[in-house]
Length: 362
Image (cartoon, rainbow, N blue to C red):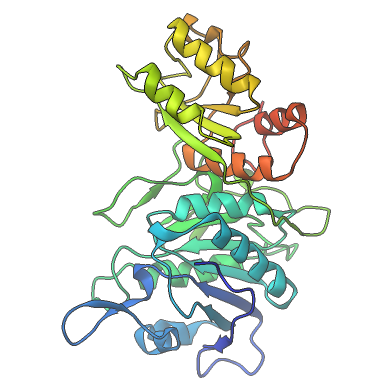
């Protein structure tokens, strides 16, 4: 289901705030556990999001204007598509000048993919876009939804005390007590509250009694105006290597009609089989114009092509080393860069380049 660009705004500004709150946040509710409640039969169903003030009395203490864009039919995050990412980007563009920050409520299963995609689509982002959600519905007593949402709202309007400038001009994920760069996030837990981690990059902030920001790790405010991209190329695939993988399987994946890009999940620091048939498969794909991005299967992996003999031939075959990028950030980066419609040489250069802080350059 694609996100409509025009949706009715719901005002949920807390009753009792000052007549002119200092800041404003747009909450975009796409779906997920955070907006669910139990009906009389004990089943989880989407709630009407304007009820959030009743479910979360702590919102009354926030001195900010709060508005919500809620989808008529919330999306289970397992059904999120590239079209939905483009719709989210368009929604933020349409309301960009009217709000100081944005909070996207999203299901946890594909949140890291969505945050990574938005980081590429929103070029020169000068405001904070925070993805958050919950492991437990807001109606439950021991829910994490309240803390996650309240802290995300606080982060969305955070400013440097002296300069008054936006503190985190990035797409990010806040969950439990960590603020993570969106294209560095990975879901690692389904049974505990600490669902997301960033293995190869420090958190942008930690939430304790206060939110402690790691300002040195945050991207600088852009000097150019926001540019919202509206093209993604979905003709991509992820190929995860495993011992015993056959030529038939590799060819079936790499020879998909119209394929333009492949995230190749390799071993360790970017190592792959040296069997002649495997190398020929990569060579053939590259000659057909398929861009291949090498990503480590290790959660803390860093691809260094050529460090071992088992990766020394990949560069010559046109495979691009993904450095320390996550699979989530890699596949969305492929969609984004291929969607720019550049030449093969320029596309390869952009895939190897750090665009939004998704890889550690230098």
